[in-house]
Length: 221
Ligand code: GRF
Image (tube, rainbow, N blue to C red; front, side, top):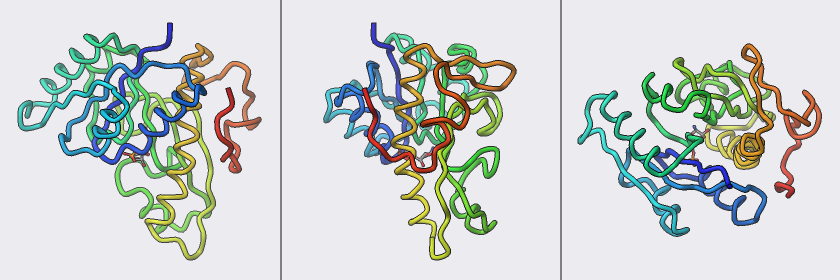
């Protein structure tokens, strides 16, 4: 059986699109059972509908309490048979009951090399700090802010003439490669966590895809 996943979105959904594209190119064998958004206007919802993927919207207006919102989200995800929750630009923190409903089965992608620059506006913060490299991080979600065990990272250089937009785009291009790849490792049951170190069976540290700054090639079957 293909791993049933749910994707949580709030905005443009380019990462969702990368996951859909990888599935359609038969590079990724998972089944998106639900795309859930807190924003009824998210472009990501349109992307899902275009590909016939069921969508569900839960607004803050209807569920002002975080715990009620999350309870509703868990209910919808469980009803769809979701086993892995993929946060893709979902602009809310996840409460403990939500985490407990999917233990070590919620992942996120963040546009910096964690633990540097957790939180929001991280491309601006990276530029202001003057880092020479940035990138993206796929990690398990825990109770902290972007603090869970790191599954994969990809690195991009920061150019002298970069602004927030150019850096954001360069990082996003890596996100679109790394996120489907990380989901594939999880779907293949190759990911284990020892203490807080994530080990991917068949992939060695800096070898291959894991940390390669030049990782731009399309996913291989
Ligand atoms: C990405 O930069 C991701 O790292 C962050 O939110 C952004 C989502 O972009 N968590 P998109 O909606 O996938 O285009």
